[in-house]
Length: 313
Image (cartoon, rainbow, N blue to C red; front, side):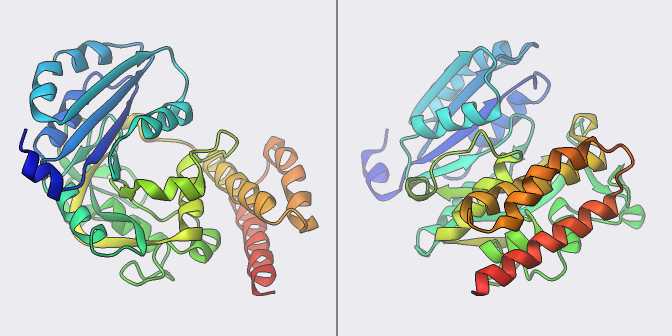
């Protein structure tokens, strides 16, 4: 271990919540092994996988112990993503935390690039780069208009996952200080790509992931935005895997997004009766089989406008 380097370079804790990704977990780990930044501890929890994910991680134990300052691997009965993430964050010793799902891939220079920014910009708590898309065979691909994988740029509607987010939130300038702002997260929903480096101290202000929040990453982004800024970099720093298991139907997506938004506003503004009213009605809305997407969008817009009106006051 190079003690001199340890003293000048902050420790980065890479955390991987692993679940049923026997085909991909080793590729994910290799992407961290091959990081250009050296001072890393790797923390993995296998959250009760029913496939051979545990065995695949064990096969890499010797390699990980040689590469990382610390390698901590825990096997547990299934507890779910939120409890697993909170356990990993609690274990982390680093000044910074890098979160990666057990089927995604970090570009070799991802941590170094994001750390270079955060180390000199102390008013930022999160830094993230462009996300390219890969398929179940780790082949680069793009999105058609219906978010299916295509392999020709000429057929692509969205050339990267980040570009999809930009097109979905055209009022947000991803390269300005408005990126990841609290108001924008409320108005335009979550637009933060994957593969972000977070200053660990921000969790002292936000607390950890909330079990009551329907979409945990959307909710935690809103909490971070209350206290600090976020930065989007143009460089491709992450490869987001899109395969059959990513797919969810449109209605549950709208419902969970709407519910997360309402949950945040309800606990942040408990005296606003309209937020409570809409939250109490939400499950009834969801039960209606004939409810259309435009109904959700209309109700979300009403809530967002109420927030903006209240926030100005």
